[in-house]
Amino acid sequence: MKRIAVLGFALESNAFAPPCGRADFEQRGTYRGAEIDREARAEHPAIYSGISGFYAEMDRRYGRSGWQPVPVVHAASQPAGPVEEDYFKGLLAEFEAGLAAAGPLDGVYIAEHGGATATHTHDPDGEVFALVRRAVGPDVPVVATLDLHANVSDVMMDSVDVLVGYRTNPHVDIFERGAEAARLLEELMAGVRPTAFRVRLPLVGPSVTLLTADGHPYGDLIRLGQSKLDDRVMNVTILAGFAFADTPKNGMTVIVTTRDDPALAKRLAVELAAAGWADRGRYVPRMIGLDDAVAQALAAGADPMSPSLLFADPADNPGGGGRGNTTYILAAFLAAGVHGCIAGVFFDPALVEQAFAAGEGNGFRADLNTRETARFSDPLSWDARVVHLHDGRFVGRHGMVEGKSVDLGRTAVLALDGVTLVAISKRQQCLSSDFFEAFGIDVAGARSIVVKSRGHFRAGFQHLFPPERIREVDVPGLTSPNLANFDWQGLPRPVFPLDSDAGWALPS
Image (tube, rainbow, N blue to C red; front, side, top):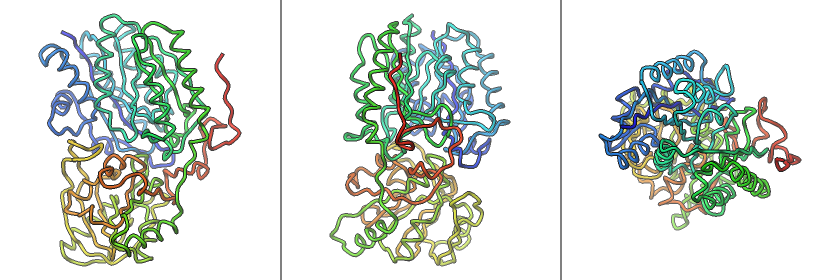
């Protein structure tokens, strides 16, 4: 019977956001031992979908009684700043103790994000991978899944046999990549020898340019990479990386893993990297200004026969470390008299407390961001009426949360003149129309929608808003796609498009 350890650490770190620690990981989801087993096989799991996919594929191949998962710890936080050193070292100690107690293992699956930094190092993911390799030795196969926004270090490459990156953005294939990890691990356990080659480009694409739908450069490159899979090529992973980590590891990374053919791995990795570099001019954001957004929202509200519009606030994306509570768009829409608008989800536990104290149907003076200290999260006061109060728990039906258990914490639906605002107590991005519909809001009847999200919302609103009715608004924030707005410290320079003169030469 195959005995497979399962563990992981999932964090996307924004160097410009406040650090995170134990409370952040406990709130988003930390599972230990048998909790991982239960969540992985639950009907509506809350755990990382890659683990569910891994378990499902292993169960399909071996039967539940034909393999033995050895679950250790999986800890995930909403994207935030660097992880605090004390918490992270404690987590490493848990990993080490769990692997030591596991006994002989046939393989390890690491469900990682890959975009983390820590207050003491820019490579905590590398520390996780190196610890696993030390614990199990050089001969036990280790496979890891990574987010498309992972920044890959030498240590990460050297410590793991196969790195499996997502192929979609929005990330609707996390379950499938976990299943792929199981299939590849089975090959390794049967004796297949993986050989990998990596190329990193001086290309750091702004977040809104990294979609993978048809017509987007990143998606075109990933599809080109997948066309190379055959009996010799195990996996092609192309990671855009996460700019806001601000580390020496940043830069689009191509990894080709073959079945014992290092020359082929290198040739294909260089070929794909060259294709990506040749297409670099397409990684330039095209957003609209706030004044244009206001004008379009007003027009949509005035003409019920015109198509409704969705406005994204990528600069305040909780999915990239944003606080989810800047008021630039909200304040402008309110001041202009926009109506028929739904906005959210707005992270402000103090505002939610105000609403619960007022009670459903009652009015109160809504004071936004009274406890927030992060840059860009300015206060705003407006007369409001409490439309609905909710515990914030639901099962998603669309996009990345389809079939998943979601918990926004206590939630308040507020009417601020012509804008309906959904305020939440647990910070996260608006991933789908479920984040409004779960609270009785008629999304289809709205004239305009404002979402705190960079791009993942597209999968959860595609049944309502085709791409031509989506606008990305250029306002300030911790996750602004305007990379020139930030004081970079660790990012390797020059990089395109931040530096138009960036160059790249083919590896020798």
